[in-house]
Amino acid sequence: MSIIYGAVLNNFYSGKSHQGGQRIFALRLLLSILFILAAPVKGWLALAPSRNRAIVPVWTPTSRSADFILPSSISHIYYSSLGCQNSKMKSKSSANEAGPMPSAPNSYSSASNNKLKPREGVIDLQTHTHRKSPADVLSHLSNACQELGIESYDYYGDFQADSASSYLRKFESELAHHFGKEDAVFCVSGGMAQSIALMIHSETNKTNIEKLGDYCPSFACHPTSHVTLHENNAYSELLKMEAMILGLEGSENYDPESLKVKGCFGMEPLRLSQVQKMFHAYDERENPDSSSEKFMLSYPNKVPLGKTHVSTIMLELPHREIGGKLTPWEEVEGISCLCQDRGVRFHCDGARIFEASVGYGHETLQQTARPFDTIYISFYKGLGALSGAMLLGDTEFCTKARVWMRRMGGNLYTLLPYAVSSWNGFRKNCLSPVTDCDISVGDDGNISYERKWKFDRKNFERRRQKLCNIMKMLKRDGNIGSSVSFDPVTPQTNIVHGYLQISLEQCMEVIDKVETKTGIRILNRVRSCSDESKNGGNCSAFQCRFEWTVGEANVLIDDAQYFLGWQEFSKVIAQMKGNE
Image (cartoon, rainbow, N blue to C red; front, top):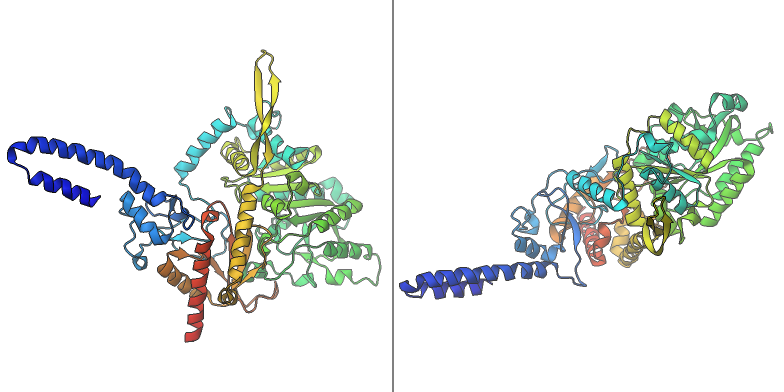
């Protein structure tokens, strides 16, 4: 292009003065045409698809939102073609540091978590969500209202409305239909939804407390349950309940703070045998020779098993804190049958139930929901909503849930931004339209058509398969295997946890070196493992750990970029150990 410009200018200056007016006009016309033609060509050069490169999400300090650029080897072409002065890469080693990046939705909340500042034009392998500015989010909500046909507000949960007159009740009905439950209740947070479910199942109102006598209302869960690790014992402080921790010998030593710091490498998910063991201990509690009270104590107040009344078994699908592992499906069904025989409610902590459903190979959400009496799902984790949760169950349960939501202050004047964001995220990520539709005739004789939707697992299957493919590729390199230990070794969902035998400071140093050399950021959220923990898995050799989730953003990155980054990561670690 510069050659053409030079030829035109040379021709202009070599002309005679009396021809200047004509030449200036011709020059301006030609340059205008060239600029018009050059713009799409430059854009095509940067954005033309290729099997050897991908458009990937990166953080740019100018926009504070997700941009899409080419891999680092050619990203300077893209930036130069756009004339982005602030995003221009002078060299890989001199990449400018960006401003603070908002916390990712799945990032750890502990102060020990280390988040590296992103740099311009760097391929980010760990961040799995697209970054949007607040203005963009609100603009998208406006568009979602139009797409969903929302023309009026909800008021205080629209408890007395039906799905024909309330968009919120229509949203709830849609979720209930796809999960095969009678009703659903939208909640502003998962913590509130889980507490409501436990409260209803435990029946800890005054009348039922009298029925329980001296027995303490309780529920049973896995050691890594969210309600015991991350909710400041709300079930105990607010609901006056105890947790029976399954899967630990000598549960009096249960230390959730230790698990949060050290991790849970190698820990298995909740198993049928663990539930059977607890119920067997209940059967033996009238036996004076029984040792059940010695090996099973509740948390946090260490109430003996024989003095508790377990009303609910809570199962998380998948288990986030142990790398997205799943309880074998036949055992899920076995626990359900056992709970029915015992008159105990079976509740699903389904914050990531869509990922779990695909991990089990289910074609519908009803298959995944069938064994459970009640289910909680989240909309912001894998669906990209602002916030929001849904409780699903039978009509009686949901009627009580709406009462408890009011008691807990959850029925806001309007839930519009959260509900719209959640419904839109569910439609965009989980459903696809079917060919036929519902036809109805109104009182005025007008015919209306309602589109039908079905569960579409392809988005979540793509994310899970992406992680599986990458893990297979990494396994083939022995150096990578010696530098990082993944748990589980073969991903069951789109989540895996990694453990490193180097310190957090060393890890940060290696990450910087890899980023400088390759333009790839392996990790931006890493946390230290403490050796002061009393229990929680065989993690004594590990000094730091991380969570790796494949989502809507990093699923776009080529597998080769993952391999290149981790390969260089392992090389730098090997060099570091060789110099010690």
